[in-house]
Length: 340
Image 1: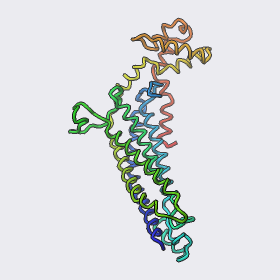
Image 2: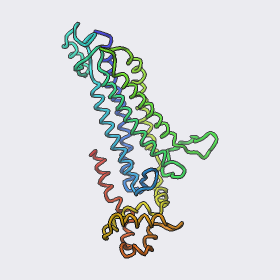
Image 3: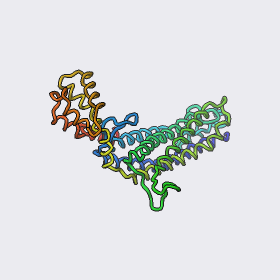
Image 4: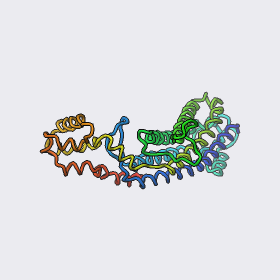
């Protein structure tokens, strides 16, 4: 045997045990995500593209998207862990020159590992790289959610607020501050996880049957990546558990754009009345861009002479109620909760 036979096989065992620890954090975070999806399925809020009001959505649907992504990342992680549960006892350059494959198979069976298909002096590092990338992907998902929470907590938006414990300070100089520090912290953690994935990619191309350029890297990135990923999962679960969702502020913010979030459905209603899409678009855009200071889109449409004959108050009431946007959301959320 060579030292790598022992060290690489032992690392695989460690990965299997460490993965079980991460699963506990994943389950905890997933349960908090599911709770928010169910609780806020019908909580209307502004959907935003380019940072601007687009169409109405619900906070539950927002969370359902993060839940679905998280579950995909869990699947990637499990696949990568499975690919790492590999043992290697095939000697100096992987040829079994000093002992038989039967020894390797017996040891791997006892350790609940699979023998490497073709080894050099080491287990090929594409397996290790895949695992680090899967952890980075978990970080990416947590960062995407963190960025959303940070934006929604801005003073101008203020739709959600991270939990604030007794005695906590938002700023040493400004007593009023409640900063999204956990979401910011998790954004930084995601950057670290991506850097570890990059380092693991550099470890794949070793010289000939091996060199040791990878070992100094792995001594750092493997324990660190697992530790901070576990930390991130638990911290995000805590954030979601204590998250305050301001439903009224969400409605107030929707009203800031004076009903223009419903413009696409007004457009479709005009097309149903016989206008071409281009004509309908031009009409709705004209009215939207000429709103007076205290006027909303619905009122402007009702007073517009060119559109009076094409769209009724009853139809506009239906469009501007927000119910049309909720119509399919429950179906999407049901699909997300079922893992479809």
